[in-house]
Image (cartoon, rainbow, N blue to C red; front, top):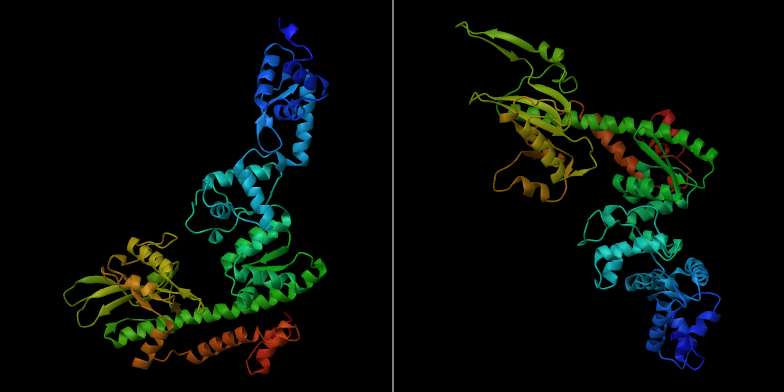
Length: 509
């Protein structure tokens, strides 16, 4: 019988004795360690025999052992097994890295511990030599974070900082993982663009509020990065705060007292309002100047174009039906033929992306055509293929973005007037084998048209004064006295002969 074989001299009895004398359950390797004279395979066979005959209890599933392997827990009874399971759970909470069973997880933890900085899953995937799949690395990072073994950034990294050449699947979240919070922040700092770093340093080292336009001027940070990093990242981390009034956002150190914030905000809002008025006026005059030069140039080239008195400032709006009908007249020739025509040929069409429409008639060929214009008001921005293709697409479809019908679009001539184009890409795109999609005119080309024809914009002096004022504002914004808070930009400009309003010169940045 089995009971006769369970004697003190047998190996089976020795294995049973180790289990019986332990107050908690044991893994097979722990039992083997206490029986130095018995080999591991023998211990395994003995455990199976004891389990089969009901002399010991065994856990239902395998659990992680120290070192990463999995195994069952053996105890003299169910109480001993459960006691070990509770002890094991506490040990896993105190030292979870000790019980990692996945080789990939162990390598990720080892990498993060050694580097002491944060990485995205894609960076970890590359660093490990692509021995694992990108999906596997991402899933392992998520599991390690859920088990509280590693830390994760509270936001997903803005996509322009994601690694090139890797999967952009939604399954791969571009969080930053590190062994601790300090490492995560180091990883974030390492991955953020230079303009973002500079802007963050300005805000954290200053006791002033920074309007978005000042940050853009000092650090060249884009509006896109301001929104992505400062509103979606740093604000959520609690290191930067912001307030938005109108279309202007104001950023400041989260540790700045609220009374200081309120005081500075009052000054900055007024200054921002005045500056927006100046920029709006400059943009409006840029647009009016562009349409004036373009129309006068066509007239000199032999085209018949009627305009209203006070053109270009008083150009009527095509989208206003009552206004449009004022200029529609009925005519009759000597043969009794009756027709209607407009006594004005240049119209505002303020529906993005179309700004003006011009009805053009060739005096010699007696042919009519509609020129459809977009005049970009931002005189400091360069424009590329993306905006141009949007404009051309709307013209070809005969609809603006808001759905307004563009008159004469089937025979329309798209005209894109802007301050400056970005590189050669736009012109290369426009001059492809299919022919030119539209006319592109920059500020320099408008100036050449003026030089060649002698066209004089009636408010040219006022326009150039606004241009000089803006250039001076940009220049003096970086002056030492302004940066130190000793003077305002407007005070600097007034000292150098520029006309500024009295309330502008008193404002403190």
